[in-house]
Length: 267
Image 1: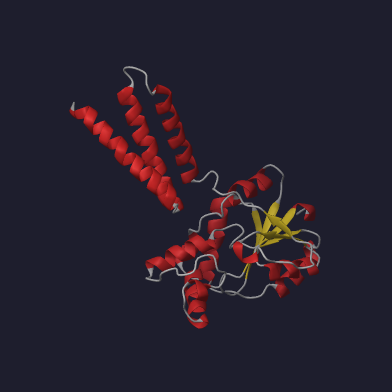
Image 2: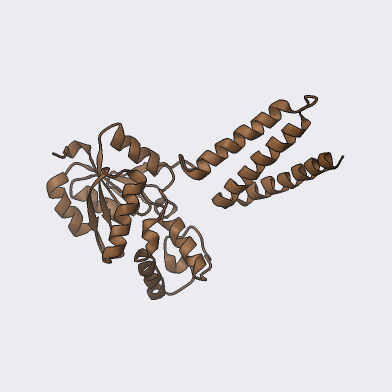
């Protein structure tokens, strides 16, 4: 028996999953260059007409990529926390695609990232479809439950039919000034418990270990080796994050460290 007070209805893309990252990566591999980052409209992002942009989204949403989208920043940590520690269960409401294969891939992706029994219902709509009707239907059963969205129009619909609506903060909804009570969820700057999260901490520990040996006679070589490893790992993280300032800092720093290491080896 599902406890209605422990149910959270949620959109997937832009709330649970980093659809934007997956889409931009997919577009790049298909020869499309991102022109205007940060805009909500795909047509404006890639300087193409609306019909072409819509078709690209439909193709992507029906592709095998739906089985491999990464979690959105801290989503994996907090959804697992709510499910495993507090007993919440989630209902997915997503305008993904009518393609059954894509739907199965998304279901598998959500189970893989958040746990096999975290999501108890999956409601799939056509690509970009409005959610008015499905939210009205679900309100008959789950009225008063939490509803999480990143598109303020859908958040408002949920609030109007009786859900406790929360708006996941993104650049495209920062200017929202509606009358419906919407709670913005602040997101941390970096992901947690992903591969890059573990690598950045390992890299930091290596650098700190190297610094602890700095200036100690007889430990110069260990200092250099640990520093090279730590900075190299931070360079990898910087590339994953696409942070040019960190790439520059760690890239140049690694070159200096390697130069010093080679000089010592040749002495």
